[in-house]
View 1 (cartoon, helix red, strand yellow):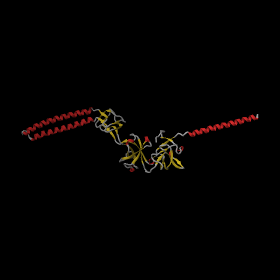
View 2 (tube, helix red, strand yellow):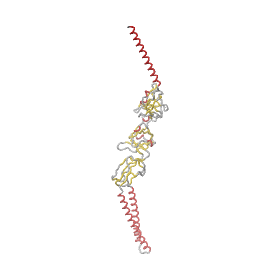
View 3 (cartoon, helix red, strand yellow):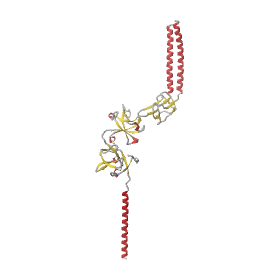
View 4 (cartoon, rainbow, N blue to C red):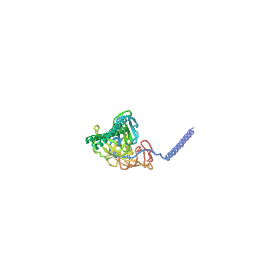
Length: 374
């Protein structure tokens, strides 16, 4: 019995050893299989370094405006008959904006025409009298005094005709003023009157922002306006497109402060108007206070190499990363300012830098997790 029990124990021990050996082999095979499978590229958030001068710059917020804006209004009084455009419509030069009821002005033209006809009749009668008196003067039937009276009457009649003709021209012009047309091609940004409304001459009916140059209007406080000069270069950033900086310059500085806000109106032009944001959008204007070659990156992009600061730079062709040593200049609310080791065209990893290794291939994405073609 003891021999049988011992045999069973030995058999169980041998089976366990064999099973363990099989499991080890399976695990080793699995590990070898995993090691042989290439690691897929890891998604990594990348971005260009931004000029650090923006971090130290004076920043002012403003709105985008057209450089030229026109307040369109009728040149005569009247009641608006029709309005043919709406806010947001783009109009061409000479396109009709609105029309007045022309009835009163047509009656004025008729009245002026009747006055002109009467003046011409009086002139013709005076001319006939002048001719008759001239013949009698030649025969010495009348005195020069009588002839001078008739001559002056003719001159007065002729002057009345000229006056009536001028009044007729004014009435005809006013009749044409019942149609309001755009003086330039542009965008309708405001409507201030509706059909059926009685308006006076010069009252703004619509606001037209002309096509072409656009600008950002900012307000500068009294204690800073002395440091501003026309032509100063600036960087402009749209609130709707954060991170994209456009070149611009100061074009105009208001001569006096606003009586309520005590700030000066400053207009900043875009160097390339085709890149400007849409009218009415909010924009930030950066006035650099330093010309040092520095870069601003998110704090999450900062890594270290041998105890020194570094950032991961992505190779545009292979998408492989490498550590580049940098110098930290200052820590800001917007990120960290660096110098050395970077150029504007570099793509750097801005998140998850502690999970990368030298030479690792990544799949670059933007802040919205969209793939980027470097």
